[in-house]
Length: 77
Image 1: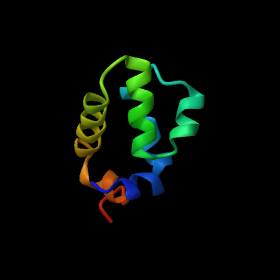
Image 2 (image 1 turned 180 degrees about the horizontal axis):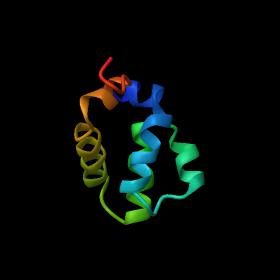
Image 3 (image 1 turned 45 degrees about the vertical axis):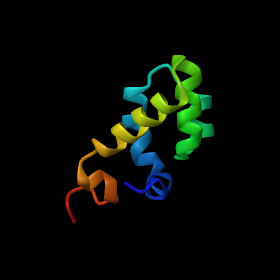
Image 4 (image 1 turned 135 degrees about the horizontal axis):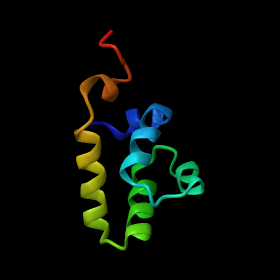
């Protein structure tokens, strides 16, 4: 998954991300804006985990998304 694509479709991804990382605040989500490095930093900070672990969580999360969501083409168009 290309994080540029996530950033471009952040509004679609943000709801799912909020479900996974409930400790992040509204301010955190605004700051993240689909940027992987920002997401990793906030996960690291809020959950008290190492950067490598936070990065792995972010990658695992995005890779678990259905293909339609990854491409921004919900409904399989």
